[in-house]
Image 1 (cartoon, rainbow, N blue to C red):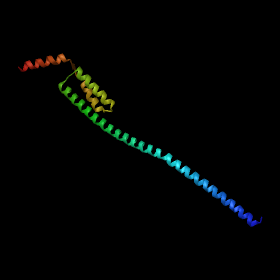
Image 2 (cartoon, one colour):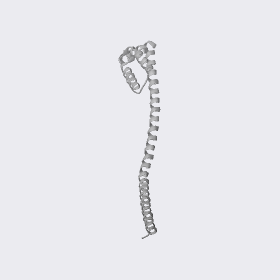
Image 3 (cartoon, one colour):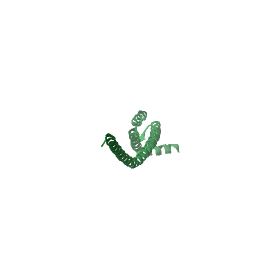
Image 4 (cartoon, helix red, strand yellow):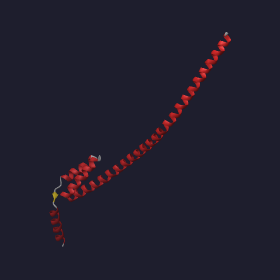
Length: 146
């Protein structure tokens, strides 16, 4: 075997090996790419669903904050109106006092401010009358008007 034959056989072998490696590489690359595409599809769908859930939760949080603010505003108004009525009247009943305390506690738990607390303290200094006392006074006033 001369040098030319030996080199040509060697090159054939090298070309065959490189060709084989290239085929194997392409097969593996294609297979990995297909597996990755199949793998990514469910993850992409899941990510899309998660994004939708996150968006919905953010909208619910915003709505909840808006509703909480509206409820606080209504509670503050109701508490202040009651306080003003009781302060003008100069007294309140035990039931009114308990209801006002419940409203104020709820208002505070939701983050209400100290302005309402000042009004509650003023009302807390007022005398508490029983329902019977109030009825007697109303009857007495009615008789005086006659």
